[in-house]
Length: 162
Image (cartoon, rainbow, N blue to C red; front, side, top):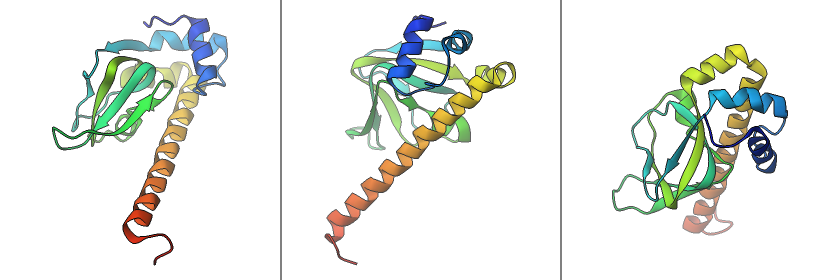
C-alpha cells in the first residue's frame, strides 16, 4: 500500500502527465497493486547488473545514475514524475548503471512484475495505460540520447564538418 490517497495520486498523475487519462475510480483500483519505498540520501536504488523486477515512479526527490567507475560522478538524473527502471523491467536484461537516491533522498511508488501481470488480467485498461506511459518514457530517453550524441559529434568534429 502507498501513503498517497486516491485524490493525491490522481492529482499527481495529472500534474506530471503520468497516466493522466485514468479516472479517479481507476486510480482507486490501481492503488492496491502499488507499493512505496523511501530511500535515504545516496542510498542505492538499483545496482548495476541487476534485473529490475519493478517499474518505479519518483514521487519525491530525485535519483542519479552512476557510471562504471566507483568514483564516477552522475551521468544522468531523473526527477519527480519520472518513470525509472522500465528498460530492465520490460526486457529483463541487467541494468547498465547504478541508480542512487539524490542527496536529499527519494520516494517512489512501484509496480512489481507479479502485480503488473495480475493487473494485465484484472484491469487491462489500466495496464495498457501504464505500458503506454513506459513507451513514452523510453521514447523521451532515446530522443534525449540522440540529442546528446549529436551534441557530442558537433563538439568532437566541429559544426558543419563531415
